[in-house]
Length: 240
Ligand code: FPP
Image (tube, rainbow, N blue to C red):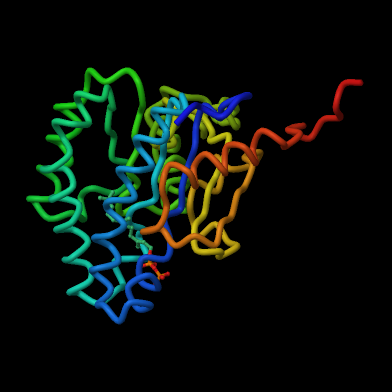
């Protein structure tokens, strides 16, 4: 598929939602929806590469998701390990560099090992940065940034008056990649669900009724075409 003609969002973030509903519509247990969702992740990655997106940040598992029933949590963690085992070679060949953002101390030892492996084995990728947010919450991320800065002040390596927006930004997990240009949320829900609250200040939002397992590169293309019609002003007025 040809890339959409026009400015391409450098950084796209996605709230992948609707796996459960996709499964219930088919009278299947929820983990089947997550498994189908794993295929959609591949579509999103390949679509992003085709379109020329440089950074793709996916919300795969929130801090709040730890409150789901234990069998669903373990199905999701198993899927994550399976995704990494199955895709790592292809991701590397495609020039994708994977990073995992979030509190990885809560993962199982196997999950942590898988995450470290995919980060290590894709470290040379230069085409697309793929950030998987796992055990992630935005408020937790901001609180962590505040803690890290407070530690520096206590140690005397930073002055209180140096704590400004740039200082906070530099301590967020996303610091190396900057803010998303476009946020896509599937399944029609109109909320941010504790995802990238700081980073989305001026991001264009695109909400589609498509359930995540049905997401494909065409859905991504539609989102980018819609983005290209937006007038991004960042709080200023358009030059005339
Ligand atoms: C939201 O759907 C989706 C999740 C909580 C998990 C997302 C996981 C995947 C897409 C699969 C694995 C991911 C990777 C990176 C391999 P939901 O369960 O909240 O759906 P519902 O709102 O319809 O119940």
